[in-house]
Structures are given as C-alpha cells and as structure tokens.
Image (cartoon, rainbow, N blue to C red; front, side):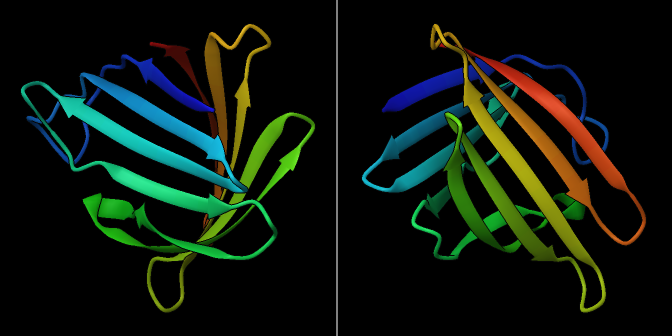
Length: 137
C-alpha cells in the first residue's frame, strides 16, 4: 500500500525565520518493509526529505534520524505489526552518554482517510509524548 498523508501545521523549527507550512508523510507498506518519507515544507523552501526504511521481520534497521538542534544522526530500530498498527521502536545516541528512545505507532483509520502517529520520546531527563493526525491526499 502506498499512501500520501499531509498535515498543515504552524510553528517554528530551528530558530526564528523558519515557519513550518506543513508536513507530508509518504508511507509504503509492502514486501515485509515499512517505508516512511517525511517532507517538511517551510514557505518556498523545505528541508531535505527524511526517508526511513524499517524491516518488519524482527531484524534491526538503521536509518538517518532527526536529532536536537536540527542535526541528523543514525537510529537503530525494530518494527513490527500489531493489531493493524505498525510500531517502530528506535534508539539514537545524542552524545556518548545520552540516549534518546523513541516509539512511534502508525495507525490508519478504518476508512483509510487519516493516519494517526503517536510518538513517545524518552531521554535521561524526561518522557515526552504526542499525537499527529494526517489527512490522506
């Protein structure tokens, strides 16, 4: 299944002058793999696409991942299907001492019109959670 979901948001990223106009996710779920392409648009320009590929066979995947301060690092992930959802658990070392653990749960509505992504991030200081809802294009 190939799906394109879009979410229009406001806000800023990486400091002043970079308002976010929207985020588009392109999801490919086929042949034992789950691919997520994140496309962030910021006015006339945008950040480079972030493409992540996750194996659903229980083996580890390594992908580029966003890191604090707009940097990118490499995250090790395990993904699985569970009750109609795809769950991705990742680990990213920010520094030699600081690990960021992320769990993302991807779930498409019964009518396939929306994608809900629930995210939980945990580091040495706190746990943060959020939910993003995308509409199908």
